[in-house]
Length: 120
Image (tube, rainbow, N blue to C red; front, side, top):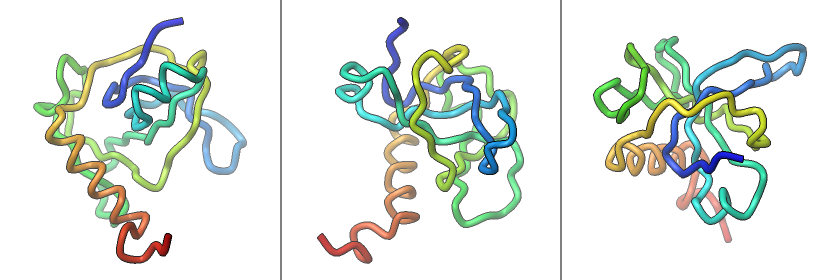
């Protein structure tokens, strides 16, 4: 089975939230490399080219996607995540720039309300 790393942009079979059908769409792997090597699954966030203004979308531009074939500005849908078996990854497209990934993680933590709103 191919190996996948954090920040990889991949094409996956992503189910609609209603679970009535699936759509092939780009996604970014957010799970750690440790998680990705120890398990048969990865954790991904969906990527969309529909860039309407929504609070939970993190914009990414093609210039921040190394070797990737995203040919237009896109957004990571931080509210649309999935743990998916690696067999449902169709192909790897490239990798998100490290600096942009760090911004995405910070943004994602804000969407989750961490650390201000989460009491541990």
